[in-house]
Image (spheres, helix red, strand yellow):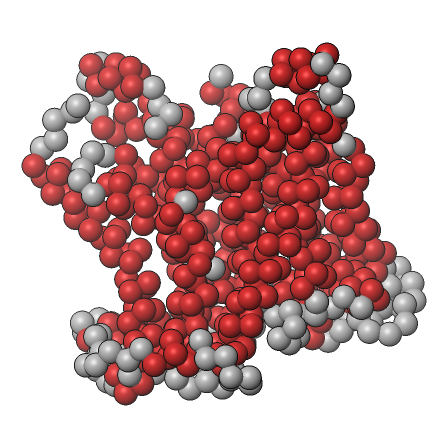
Amino acid sequence: MVPLLLVMLSVIGWPFIDTVRLSFTDARLVGAGGDFVGAANYQRIFASTAFWRAFFVTTEFAVVSVFVEVVLGVLVALLLYQNFRGRNILRALLILPWALPTVVNALLWRLIYNPEYGALNAMLVQTGLLDDYRSWLGDPNSALVALIIADAWKNFPLVALISLAALHAVPHDIKAAAVVDGANALSRFRYVILPYLVGPLMVALILRTIEAFKVFDIIWVMTRGGPANSTRTLSILVYQEAFSFQRAGSGASLALIVTLAVTMLAVAYAALIRKSAGARF
Amino acid sequence: MERQSLGFTVFLYVCAGLLAIMILAPFAWLFIMSISSTTDLVSKPLHWWPAETNWSRYRILTDLTPNTHGAALMTALVNSIEVAAIATFASLVVSVPAGWAVSRTPAVGWSLWLVIGTYMLPPVALAVPLYMGLAALGMLNTKFGLALVYLTILAPFTAWLLKSGFDPIPRDLEKAAAIDGARLDQTLRIIILPLAAPVIGTAALFAYLLAWDEFFYALLFTSDHRAKTVTVAIADLAGGRVSDYGLIATAGVIAALPPVIFGLVMQRTLISGLTRGGVKG
C-alpha cells in the first residue's frame, strides 16, 4: 500500500521540490532553464513594498473575514440550537452558500456591488441610507471590505454547521444540572457550553484561516487585485509575477514565502489547540 | 424542555427570519436578474421584480450553435463534468488503499500527516513546475492533464476522510479473512470496500464538489473549449465585454445549479462529513 502513498507524494512532492529549486534561479516561465542566482530573489522580495503591501492586505482579509465568520457562525449555531418551528428548514438552507461555487459567488456579489445598476446601491438609495450610487469595488477604501463581506457570506455556514454539531455533543444532564444550580443563560454558555465548543471551533478557525490566507478565486473574479492594488493578496501577486510577467524564478520564491507563512500560522494554531485541549481534560 | 417566555420566542423568530433573508436574498436576486429584461435591470430606481419575465437567456446559454455564448458555456459544463469525474475516480483509486494502510498501520501515520500537510501548500507553490511539466508532456489544455493536477487537491482530502472512515471497521474481520487465506487485495475488495461504501461515497461527493469548484489551476492550465471548465467560462463571461448583466447572472445560475441541487439532496451526508473532522478533532 505504501507505493500508492508514494504516487500521491510524487504528484505533490516533485512540483514542490522543483519550486524550491526554481526559487534560487532567474528562470522564465517559457524558455531555457535559467541561472542560479542564490538568494537574490528573496532579497529583492523582502525589500519590495509590493510584497509587504500584499502581505498586509492578505492578513487583513484573513483576520477580518475569519473573525466575522466565526462570530456569525457561532451566533447562528446558538440560534439553530433553540427549539422553534422552521428550524430544520433553516439548517438545510445553510448548505446553500457553502455549495455555491466560489466563482459564482464572486460573480453574484460583483453584480450586487455594481456601481451603476447594482442591488446594493439601489437598496441603500431607495431606503434613504445613501445619497448617491457608489463604486464599492472601484474605491480602494471600500473594495477590501466588500470582498470580505462576500467571502464571509459564503463561508460562515461551515463554521455554523461545525459549531452546531459541537453544541449537540454537550451532554443533556450537564445542561440540566447547570439549570438546577441556578446558572443564568450567560454563565451557562460560558462554563457549560463553551468548553465543548472550543475544540471544534479551533479546527474550523484553522481551516478557514489557511484558506483565507491562500485566497485567490474570489478576488481574481471580483477585482483582480485592484483598484490601486488595494485588494492584491499574496496569491494574486504570485500569479502576476510568475504568469503575467512570466518570471518563474522569483514567482517561485514568493510562493514559498507564502507557503512558509501559512505553515507558521498552522503550527501556531496547532500548538494553541493542544494547549486548550490540555486545559479541558 | 425549558419554558420559553413570549419575548424570547418572538426574538427567536425575528432572528430566524433575518437569517433566512440573509441566506436567500442573494440567491433570489441572482435568479431575478436572470429573468428580468435588460431595461428593468438598468432602470433607476431599480425594478426589484420584472414587469415581464424573460426566460430567453436560458435559451441563449443552452444554444449549441458554434461560437456562441451558449456553446462556450455548455462545452465548459461538459468539460467540468468529465474533469471532475476523472479526478474523483483517480483520487479514490490512490487514496482508498492509502487510507486503509494508514488506518491499519499506525506506524505509517506520519505519511498521512505529510499528505495532509500539503493542504497548507497554496496552489501557487506548485503551479510553476506543474505548468512546465504539463507543457513538457504536451498536456496543457487537456482534460486529463487538468484532472491529474486536481489529484494534488483531492487526494489528501479523500485520504484523510477515508482513514477516519476505515478506523471504526473491526480488525477481526480482516484477521478472519487472512486465516481463510485471503490475499491483502482480496481482503480490501471483499471485506472492507462493502463496509466502507458509505464513507467512500461521501469522499467521492466531496471530491466531486471540490473539483467542480476549482478555479486557479483551470485558469492557468486551460485555454480553450478543449478543456476549459465552467468556473473559467463564467469568469470569462463576467470579465468580458458582455453588457447584459442578466446574461452573466443566468450563467451563474446554470453553473451553480448542479452543486446546489447536490448540496440540498445530499445535505445529511455533507453535513456529517463536514462536521466529523471538527467534532472528533
